[in-house]
Image (cartoon, rainbow, N blue to C red; front, side, top):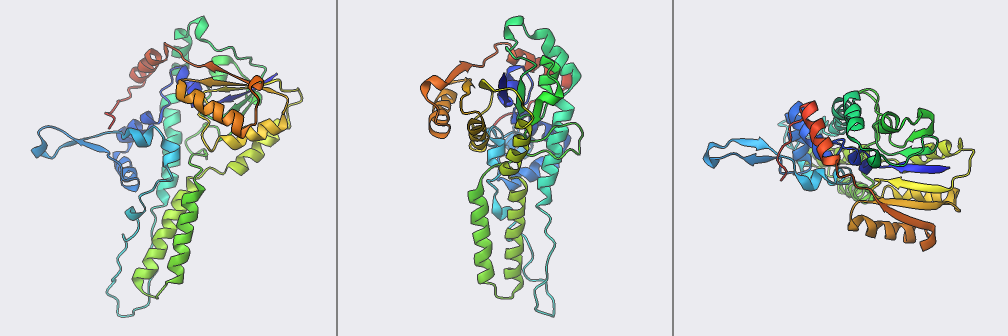
Length: 340
């Protein structure tokens, strides 16, 4: 019996346009004002000039550095987008500071909602899976046993639709996308930023001088902190849910197989949890390129304390995935914007 961990590389292997670049394109087409708002929050290059330059016309573009590392970059807020945005001189006769309403942290809730809608509108669609089934040659189907158990880090239903896996064999680590109002867990794991913002607020409180400006700065930094907190993955809570799922597994786990998992910093605690629960299991890691293999070696040896004979690697590449993705893009009418 295997426990299979499924990352975004799994959906990309099968041709789904699930890279965050396409989420950026989706926001441009469905709500370009919010896309520009996100650009301000993260100080992104979201526009390119259209010839001739003197016309001051522009087109929206997707900043590749941000969207290719979307979740990890969610902590890199340009805090000055909010800070010093409030009016410090209200022109009031009474000098006592007034609490001004700042709602910029609401953008975090909107971003999550739009992410869920993107998955529903463009990825997790019957026509997409039917197209993938038609195009995957028999040797491009992965050797996945539907009777195994699965830890799903994605939000799609590719396991069910392409490999006939039953729902009860799958645990969605970050939530399952079924309806637009589903509460998905999306975000970063950067506690350093949260700590630095908290320390900044503590210092501002110590220096508080009962002026409107001082009051505003504290409120603004609290808003930035709340925004960053809303987009932080609560890994400990997710691990509790994972542990409940593991408790339902009666069979012994012989092998832990990872398909398309990036092995980012927020992923490692889940792997350590599994290693502790099934210390005798072998591990198989998929990789796409040399950089992946280097990262696998580091995580396997340093974080999981695996010996060389306890883990192996295999390449996860489908030469048809780009062609399938292009067809889905055309089928869904997705507009691909320039990367910058």
